[in-house]
Length: 140
Image (cartoon, rainbow, N blue to C red; front, side):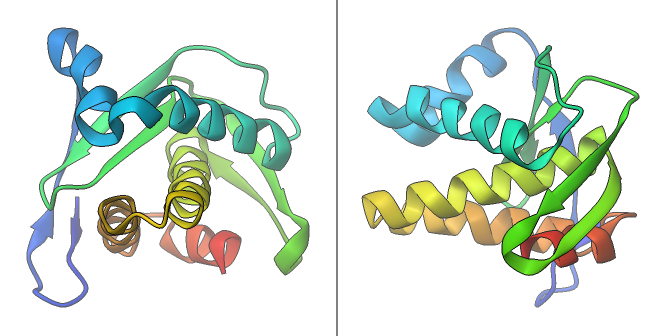
């Protein structure tokens, strides 16, 4: 749980199951859903040296946001060459980072205000995450 940066409202993440899990990507990304999912996995492979595929959880945020994270108790060594970041992140925090990278790339590629809004909702959620400092360093 975290607080929205501007409204001081608690933002809650809820893991998706069943039909919600199946429908979230088409709902949020429409015909670009496969591209978004591939971007998430691609960024994970580029940024986390010890990432080796696996099952991913999907989360909806109470502020309208969304993210994906590996279903793992592992920590990941995340390196972002563009901003000289290198650090250990939990699977949840790594998922937030790679989802932010994927949302940013897709928003720019599509010039989509809706995808940009998802980015900002997730960034607001990340501000209250227990690893917020590391997440923000990774995406800065």
